[in-house]
Image (cartoon, rainbow, N blue to C red; front, side, top):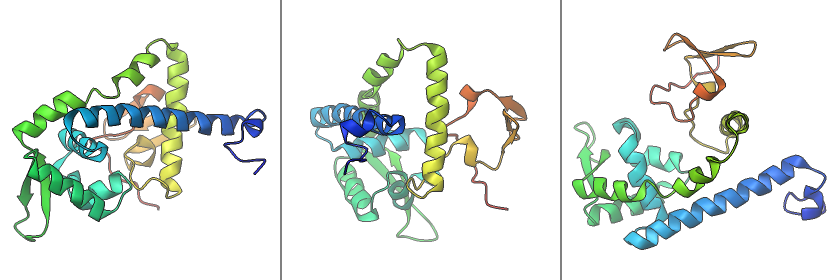
Length: 203
């Protein structure tokens, strides 16, 4: 109990605990902003997240199985959200010719309009970062990108598409390199969600 991350007295002597507590606060802010937008449009937060994800990702990622992994929730929960979005006329379904039970999800015209109205929900968070020194932002991004990769490696995050886990990524000493683009990457060039990402399998 005394050494709990959430014990303010313990936080005073442990920087990593302070950081975790800080991330929890930011997570709460994210949820508040998402809920406010959801209530305004009569949608649930996960429904908004699904619509935004579909708008900006490849068709191969836009199915129930992948969405469940992406958002770390069960397939039945995703299926319920998809069913609700379908009833509202916000999505389209393209069924596989090989398996009539399998389908990819797209956006209807109304769905695209909802994405325009909702994809700015996190802008207040970004606005606060505008006042942070650029060097500090770069250091923060470097830490976050490594943390996301490590959480994926440990099995806490099911999906990640950051450079560190990509088969095209290599590192020599402190230099990052993308073998697909054939170019050296700056720390700020590291992507958290790369469209060309291909998982690097263990040798």
